[in-house]
Length: 165
Image 1 (cartoon, one colour):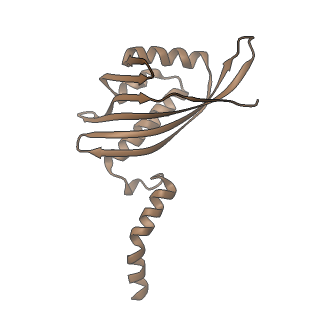
Image 2 (cartoon, rainbow, N blue to C red):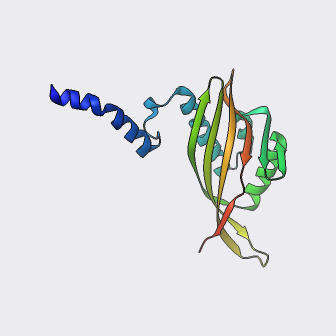
Image 3 (tube, rainbow, N blue to C red):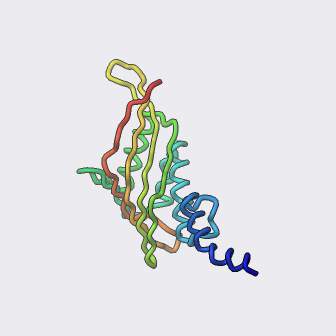
């Protein structure tokens, strides 16, 4: 009986440790449905970028979605064109997305993430150079009849590191 009481007393700590250690990965049963749907959508975006399937952006954003980075603001069509051009010019090796926060309030959610991308660019003399780009994004989401969609993305300046071959 004591063992059961000790285990029951430790349950909240074990839950917290699982969420912290695994960041929710593998613990889908512990996450709210909104968290799961948002995480799944962000994973689809990551895979679509690797596959250069930029039209997929329409599936996870609202029609009036805006992408803001520095002084530049792009609507959905302009972002698709820009992303398509970027992915064609600079082959992407990998993309890792780490969600640092999901805060859901009714039909609205705020998501913060850190994205690490490795790609190859050609320098001015024609030599391929591998770069690691790290960016931070804050996203605003809304629950629609078709699921959770991004209404606005704010991307902070990228950190660029030249990689050795």
